[in-house]
Length: 346
Image 1: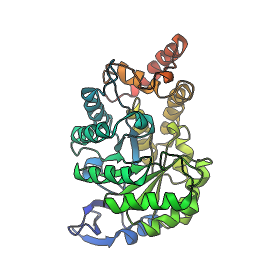
Image 2: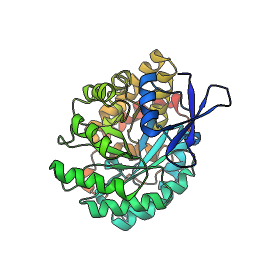
Image 3: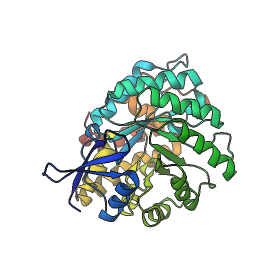
Image 4: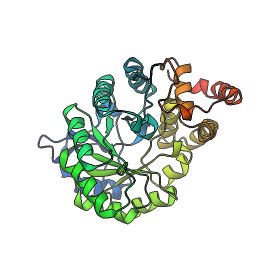
């Protein structure tokens, strides 16, 4: 199959429209035919995020949620963050998810500020809205709101009540998929979500076509999706991009890290995909210093990076027990900044 560029959904929103090479040729495939062809061809050349809806690939950043000193959500900083990510060259963004302190947000805040994120991106990069909730009824409401506000897709973790019952989880994800025609990405944070279960779920839920894999062993699970899902499920990964290169080598189509050094992750992705693997590995090695620091400090380090880069006003987190950076950590971040500054795009 010749190299191709995905233009968009076809006018019936049921088929992919593909322009092949430089010729003015249009081919229509349904989703399953297209994804199967993509898998057999080893993937397609993608244009920039602003020009393509799906299939998504690259650095899809999990946005942090900024708070004012009085613990209210800082909408102005959130809008700056969305604009910052676009200028970083990311391939997409997600809000809210675990790193965005979802469980600290009210229902009204999640809906109100999700709209702001979509507006802040202004179609320049795909936006996935987090729709996970303690139960399917709340999740369905978020899914409907995500479609109404013009989001590009949805991300859902398991029920946040911690249920591992497969019948309950199947019912929960089915309810989300039935509530919105937006593409669904499931974030794997529960051992109950096995590779076999998720592949089987793609046959039941046609809009479920992305997985953010975080269940160990992640690299081996990525290999299984590539070999066994027949192109119906696109694997991406999280874990702060700590195993990014290993995962890409196995066929992962993206990473979902925090926002602070989004331009670094986007550049690693682009270099690796362009065949500049030595350059990608060298930059990845430098980025790992931040990933290691984040393991020690938690997500507050992402807010501190965004504060230093002029995006956030504060590093406040609603769960104040998570403040975890001391003078030594701040000095280490100083050193990391000096190493990574030459690669900043913003």
